[in-house]
Image 1 (cartoon, each protein chain N blue to C red):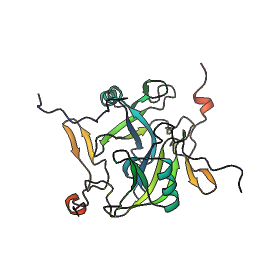
Image 2: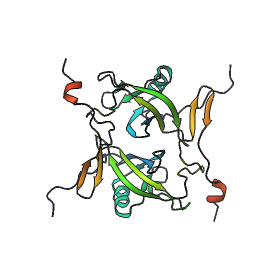
Image 3: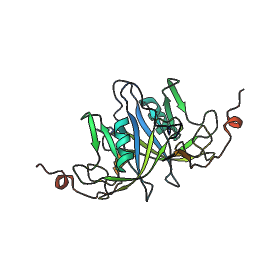
Image 4: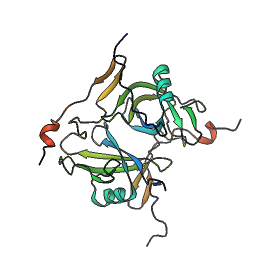
Length: 131
Length: 131
């Protein structure tokens, strides 16, 4: 047994959530940012798939559980303050965003407003069908 | 005058803060994550330099004001929910992290603990000298 546990992210005592950034392992593109609690982080480590905590639904969010677009985790990094998590992932299906874009950051701030610059990979109406 | 203002990030009514990710414009490396309020976002747009809000110091944080390592903003993106900001920046001095590393995410989670994988650019003791 080791006498020191590997340092874990410093999940805060209040809501227990830390931001987690998902970056495309191949291209470096930032795909999305979501939140993790200790349980979702542990499940991510254990399964190798990104698991977040949904603040709106107040439960674990196994990314891709509905769309099939899971994120296969290639590497995890912690920042200097241990309060932000960075995942390098292979994004199955090619799109991280529920709106069908590769990245959630598909709009650029421009003088005239927001300009769509991202690549749309799927039609959300097709993927998130009512069952 | 335009009849619609460009959509702004949805700064929340409680603490007014949104996460902002800084990514190296040239390499795509994720450099850091910090927080912005409406004022710091507006100053970032106006000046072209990244300005955050320091949660610990509770005031605007003009990145690089002490170290000189300012971030020149090349592009700004908003995510699908308008609640995360992504900056592509030129990092002056080559290091975003106050610990002297290029990226704050200089440690990778490994089975045996955290492994330093980042590149150290400067010695913090030299840069943040007491005045």
